[in-house]
Image (cartoon, rainbow, N blue to C red; front, side):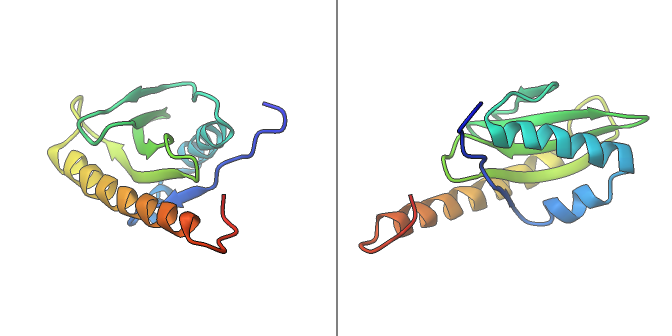
Length: 126
């Protein structure tokens, strides 16, 4: 997409540190897929995960093991990375869902704060 501004990543909670614990190949794939999302493109393997929150998606990263990254890309100012974890069972654990929901709420709070800041007189944000 020529001329399109790439959205920055905003990491919520320990998502960045958690992703850094992934093996090299899983980290590389996560970076490649998140860069696509930043550009406004679709990643190669993802699905909506509305139980975490409206507009939340789950990246699927398959190496020798399965890894997942929850993110929100619907806001204009950033891509919010909520949670990164190794998936050890067929079904996503209740703990991972609950953590994603908590971080979704934190991302919404950050989004609302940034929107309010952008509306203030003299703000240079757009």
